[in-house]
Image 1 (cartoon, rainbow, N blue to C red):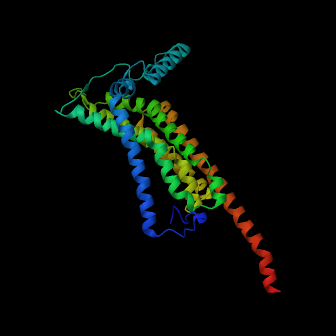
Image 2 (cartoon, helix red, strand yellow):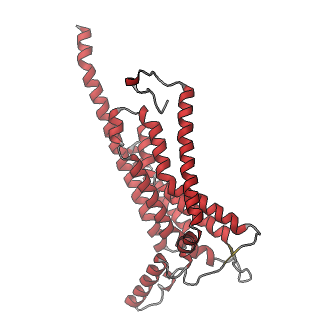
Image 3 (cartoon, helix red, strand yellow):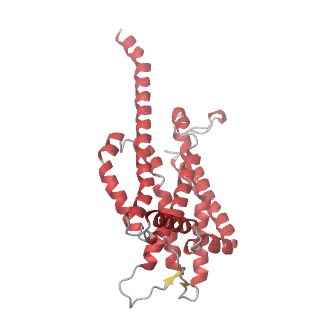
Length: 299
């Protein structure tokens, strides 16, 4: 069982029972939920800042990504003396958001606070689950994954930032301007807007955990570096399909999103190699330590 395989021997306590494991896990979960609730309250009272400066900011032409893309398009138009790069200027015409339910804005406020609370409490949640699983690891395993909470949190927040500044602005431009007919006018519901933002940002944060997932899957023997290399070409196709779905239909935007994802896949292969080398070394050390005993027993 994971946490507390053995209690503190200095206190004369034996192994934990199944119910004791469940009780300990319950308290880890309770503390994680409490952290989310605290962050929820903080986010709830920061309503104006979060909505005006974070959630609704990508709609503005002055948003960092929108401004950079427009400047890049202008530069390329001037360099090539052409106007074919004007389409790179995204979200240049802000649109209004509407609410169609009596309690829609209140519900949106609560949903935003819960999502923000979950994101802000993520490092502490990882820390709690790390504390639960840590006692079941061997000493060399504890050393190998030292800093796991920090690395996991940094990858998650990097993914969130990437999703917010890279994926969402392009998706917003494409989805808000796409039309099936000139007879249909886009009037975007605020719940739909925020739902798209949070789903893309959270999905991006989880995708950036790919190296961590590769570490644990290699550790338990589900994947190997050879497996990841053999299926690399399929992974590349899938990554570009994902990039094509979440970005406007132009090669530049798709490539801009796909490159970091491809880099993550290559990092995952490297992580898998490191784990396999560690497993091989541990196996060789075990065999070397037991070889003299086998010879003595034969004699």
